[in-house]
Image (cartoon, rainbow, N blue to C red; front, side):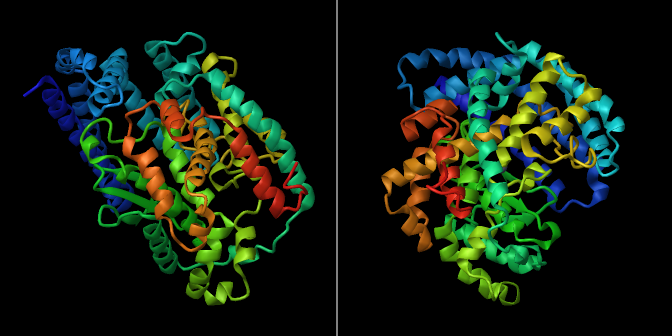
Length: 504
Ligand code: ZN
């Protein structure tokens, strides 16, 4: 056995512990009876602790040290070199956080999330406030342990988007806001351009599920290595590339479940497409949360909310729901599922307003972490920022500051990944279109193999081998840039809303 084989075996065992925990979590969200919650929490804590202990053990360090001299002989883009680079990075980071701190933070996060689950429906921010304050404090301490040069937020961001700084994100977001705010105003001035009331009817769950499944299979989601279930919060989870499961939900029996399924299938196809050689290693995952989100948004929006796609798919959907959609055609359906309406809830936001929800969360998080904003003032600041950027004011904290689960879990620094994903999705899509100029026509004919094949070769196969910025550069020939995304928004919505010249 050479040195790398021992390291691989060691990491595979840790990976198995993580997969077992993920399977328990999947079960918890889908089929577990409520009575199982108590014992399940303990089982999950045990598996996470075992994985963390093994990974941060001196054995990992010595296996790495034994193997690292190989780096001189390995091609830098080889699997082995990437495995050594990524494992070293993960190991050094994990070792910076004392085990006791990690355990204490995990306990606080689960308490805080429990409180959030009841405080949100009760619209009781004061009950949640001390927990939020605690999670902000944990975020600060995390940043201190991990280290940073400019802003503590850099350290938090780096957990989700390796080597992306607060400054990079701020520059990206400034440009997005500069174009998006006037675009939203111009759209609002036009009013509704399509009668979308048919979307508000009730669509029975089972036929929606069947239709969603047939579409995501045609996208290329392999149900011999995956399955679609139902949960309160849609998610995708994987236990290796050959078992990648997704869920969707059927809120108010709307067609929203379709887009949820397209989104999660985008995540899942990324996981199913990683190279078999990366399976069972820390590389068998996405490059970052933002890159993962680029894949889900690409299938949800660039494909799933496009005109060619609905020209292909709408007749099938109308056949499933003739009473609901008998008087609707593909063009009206396309316009209706792309209506732009500034609203309170991030997860319900359209493509144009979505990033505005992220931008003010990013600002709030920085202020909280820097100590420039007191937790007690968060609701008021939240509401003021909503009014300023979206022109709507939450009537309560339930649909305001408490709408997202992230802060209760201590996931501060995560939100920018959503917008990075939106921006990157267009860059990937355009690169795929340069390689396949007939892409729109393919989509109109329900042929998705060319697109998926390009994504597999340029994104999926690489798993976590490359840093997000390197992956993006290799695949698209350039760095992360907002211009393609902004052009896409102006052209698509300029045309739908008749803003003239493809939108100025
Ligand atoms: Zn997602």
